[in-house]
Every structure is written in C-alpha cells, then in structure tokens.
Length: 357
Image 1 (cartoon, rainbow, N blue to C red):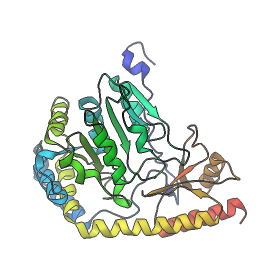
Image 2 (tube, rainbow, N blue to C red; image 1 turned 90 degrees about the vertical axis):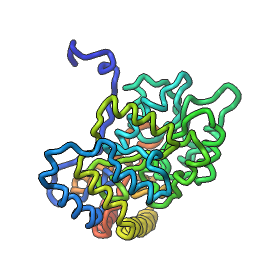
Image 3 (spheres, helix red, strand yellow; image 1 turned 45 degrees about the horizontal axis):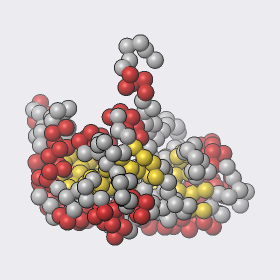
Image 4 (cartoon, rainbow, N blue to C red; image 1 turned 90 degrees about the horizontal axis):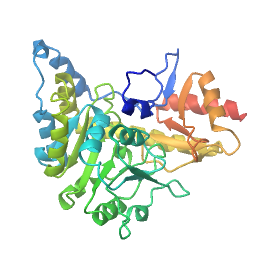
C-alpha cells in the first residue's frame, strides 16, 4: 500500500488469473486453454504479418476482422466490436452499457472478473444464487414490478460450473428485460451450446461476447469481440476510442481473420475436445466423482470422500495442475480443463493412485 494510491485502488480486490507454473513435465489443466494448436492458416497469416509493415500502426477499426466475423455470423460490420481478448471487451461493456442507477444482476457463482469490474467502475450489483444443482434459473432474472435490474450479465455456459442454459431460456430473459442490456458471455459456447448471436436482430438490448482464447486456440494473441445492435456497438466504440484507439495489433488482426476463415479446422478441433470431455466425465464418474453437466472445455467435479483442496495438492505433487476455488458452495470442486487424450489419461491414472483404486 502507498499513500499515493487513489481511493479507488485502495478499495479494489483484483482478479486472480489461473496460475502459469514453471514445472518440468507439467500437465497443465487449470486455465482452460485449448489442448490443440490454432489453425495452421492463422499461424501462416501471423508469420506473413511479421514484416516491415510492423513499423506502421494497425487499422484502428480492424475492418478486415469485422468483415470476416460479419460473414461468419450473418451480421453487418457495424454490429461488431473487437478488442484485446474478451476481458477488455467486457471492461468496455461494464463502463458503456452496464453502469446504471439500478443494480447489475449476475450469478453468485460465475466469472470472478464481474465483481472486480463493478468495484473498478463503481457499479452497484446484485448476485443471484444459483439453484441447488448449480444451474442459472431464467425465472430469477425476470423483473417483478419495481424490482428490475439496471442490466444483466452471465456466462453461457456458466463458469466455473460449465452448465449450459437453453437458448429459449436465454431469450426469455432478454425479452423480459427489454429496457435493460443483457450481456451473454459466450467464452465456451462453441464446445456444446447454441449461441445467442442469432437473437440479436430480434432484441436490440442483447450483447453477446466471444473470445478467440478458447475454441480458436489463440489465448496468446488476445482477441475478443462483441456482437449486438449497432447502437450498443457504438457505445463500446466511444469508450474504446476514449481509452485506446488501436486495440488490436497487426499480428492479432491477421491471425484472427485467418482463424475465422478456417471453419474446417475450427469445427474439427472443437469436436476433438468434446469427445475427450465426454470420455473424461465417464472415467471420473467411475472413480466416484460427481461431475456437473458441462458444455465447456472443462469439467467441474468433486469427490464425496475427499477434500477438494487436498486432491488439488496431491495432483500438484505429480505435476498436474487443476483449478481449486475457495469460494463458498464450490470449495470441494475442482475445475479441470479438458486436455489431450494423453494428458487426461495421466490425470485419471494419478487420481486412481490418490484414491487407492
């Protein structure tokens, strides 16, 4: 702490990202990175972009990427906003669209960056409890008389639980809150869900945020985007251009465009992750774990006879890193990224040894 800090800094509790450990023979299953590489076409585009052109600023509007995304999702370029990873896109959305007199509503167990942004931007918020089965209930987000939100945000699938809300229930929430922005954070939707992007033309209050870090295996590139009505996108652009008018560099734009255009690689790599996830769920269930239904590239599991922190520590001794949260209601769960088949086999063998199977 320092006497030079502002009052805002003193009051912040920063987000803690997943550990990036330096260990030999590491099986890293804690940060939901894609186990397979990005599109070869994306890598080639990045290499091609490392030329004398790097002395020049990138396109501040990233028009090539917006055009590629518009074609992919059946939108207009003015319905798209891009930024440095979905975290930056979300940060701009919190400032531009989610800060109102009424509180922002989001689940009590969800992406832990949401309360951080509320603290940073001074946003009043209400955390709504998940159901006993850790699902988000649509009816909990329907306004009741004067009890209505200033805005709503939640991930679908939710994080860290991995549970998916049906698209019909998503639309119920959006339609019932026509006077408030509803932001759906779809970081993991490509691994088993239906995107709400298809609802945008029917609902001008809907904003959908995606990342290239998960299903497109470009976490190191830092690219994210939002899709929504042009008026919502204009608000994001106004905030962005008051903060950083050049959010994406030339390498990021080139790699992201090529990734979007390589649909075959995208679909095949997602299918591989889903197949491995389904096999891992079956194996952990056989070991006695309770595994929540997942539509993400991770699973959320607990064992009725072993402490979650203890299991995480025992796995760490074997150079296997998973994510353990100390938060109420989920402190016995492990969030386990779906790795390669070989990594998952190492994990299962280690758990068998730990459990004495």
